[in-house]
Length: 73
Image 1 (tube, rainbow, N blue to C red):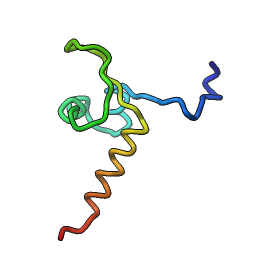
Image 2 (cartoon, rainbow, N blue to C red; image 1 turned 180 degrees about the vertical axis):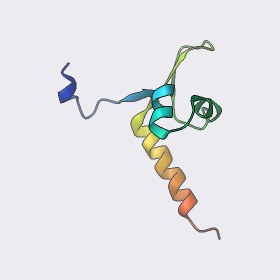
Image 3 (cartoon, rainbow, N blue to C red; image 1 turned 30 degrees about the vertical axis):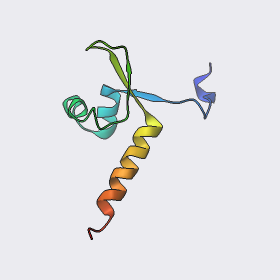
Image 4 (cartoon, helix red, strand yellow; image 1 turned 120 degrees about the vertical axis):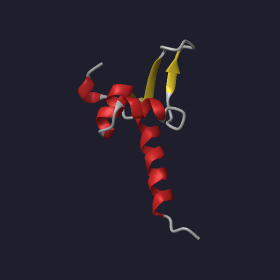
């Protein structure tokens, strides 16, 4: 598959390290917030790979930022 012609419908994923780098935070913070963040865990064991779907992460942060901007009643 040619990377330059990637299918627009194909879901992209980031690793913990990739997400931490993208957000400019530590992997420790990603681990701490893991239950809040949308993710896919490949396997049931403790050290299973965790991936973060880019589109869902973007929606998550849009939702969080809109909640922060709403005035309290």
